[in-house]
Image 1 (cartoon, rainbow, N blue to C red):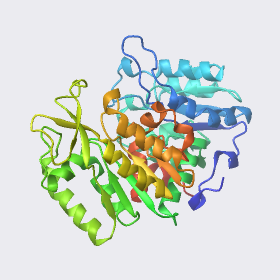
Image 2: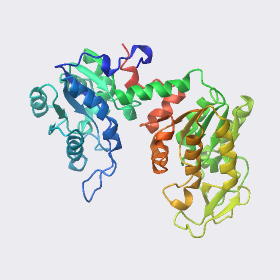
Image 3: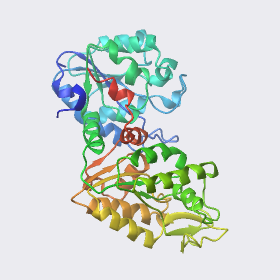
Length: 400
């Protein structure tokens, strides 16, 4: 696969007999009671890169973070269950160092033989990781002859292991996960087939306002659902009852609608919603028009007329980017809108369909349709910044 800007694919790197530092994103959910991993999708995603390196006789050093230990050693964030699960999946020993850097880590790395794997303890146990500290970056780099980044989900962070260490390693490149992300998301920034439609949902306008503004220069239409749609509806003068609204973002919403009109980008908002007194009140839910939301109710999903409007827009599209659910999809009663968007993407066989990580990735997996779209991103925040045209530090560091 030829990647843009001279970035090398792991297949192009001379890894045989070399120490290869692989930055992965093993920030997986772990059940506090059982200490078991509840979703190993991020580990599974890296297996092609790791198997490729094993087959070629590389000496593999894996680096990842887990949770937010804030630069302190916190046993509940140890990578021990992650190393155990990886060993199980690969059917190989994975030696876990008891620290990210230091004498113990150095010994584990120096003991590696061709085709063997070591994993450093949680990189965020050291304050130098998130601070992108040069001393810490140099220590990590001393364990490697070659650097491979396969952690797209952290590519928007300029941390020691994603950006800082790379300049101190002689060779560098992208793993299979990272290469696929760069390939598909780059297409959204190029000369796309039109109409190009962006579907944005989720809870907060504040999380998406920058990407909304950036997309106005790229797309033909924007479909807005989820709780963030409430802010736009209120900005239009509608009473949305107890629905979640970011009052401080009402001026942003009005400004966005004005700019969209000027740029002739059509914005589609819900015309009806599923309301209830709370997210736990599935029995009392009902469908109402967006200009008839009761004062004591909150919008928790898009309604059937809105689903039909959105479905028609997506059926005619030839490029689609989706980030964010249409409602509280974790509750079956409020999942119809999100499931309908997933189905609309899956049904459009003529379009490039990209799902932008996070809750959208969970939703399309939950609907059993992940293999029916062009690409499901492994990074929510990273994919949003990428489609905005932001130069992600983790990708910039891989360029020659």
